[in-house]
Length: 130
Image 1 (tube, rainbow, N blue to C red):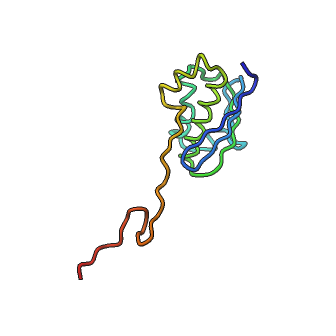
Image 2: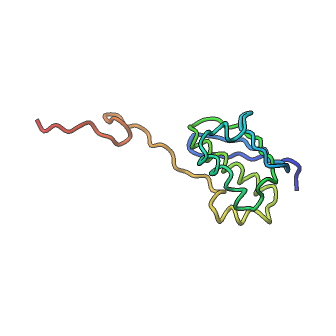
Image 3: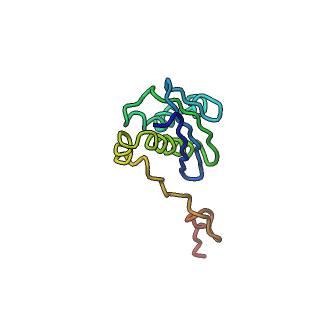
């Protein structure tokens, strides 16, 4: 087992670089505590989900830098990064649980591009018969 583990997580256009080390459960994202950074409890719960699944609440400190996308994408990227870091920290114990929960798979869904002649990706101008 390593002293400090690094992993990268991605979701939509967001990227999270995560450093995981044994500690008291402190989470720092871009130099701020997780509750201050996200502001929404649902996003905080989503990011902390890998610890619930592996029964390691309060056992690891997280330091992460997150960039790109919006806050929901950043929370998803953080969850992905934490899951990958936990899996590489202790493969035998955590990998199977995280894989079964689907946290090790990068979510491939991206925003569809806007097409010319349309307002958005699929929204069309109003049809006029005359």
